[in-house]
Image (cartoon, rainbow, N blue to C red):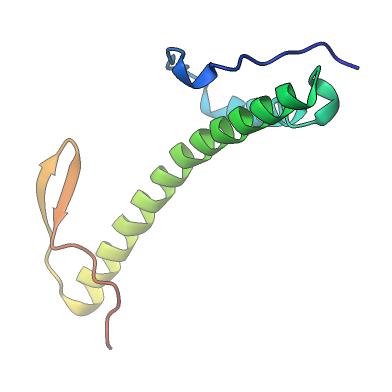
Length: 109
């Protein structure tokens, strides 16, 4: 059995921004899967805290990728909506990117 323990007050600790090169994100995610295993932790309490923290960290890694994907999808939709339906869009601010009008929930053809 592993002797890895996990601090009880982990949510109250300072956070660090870690730069992970894009090609390595999949490997870091794979290594985090080890921390999801019950046998990696010294006790059931350590497992519960460690598992929760690991899942939250994986969610952060995926969210970063999803944000980029969704931004690209929105850009493609605006391109098609302009070409097919003639909708004009304007950039309100560039940082953060705000475009007007917002994408409609649905469009009737």
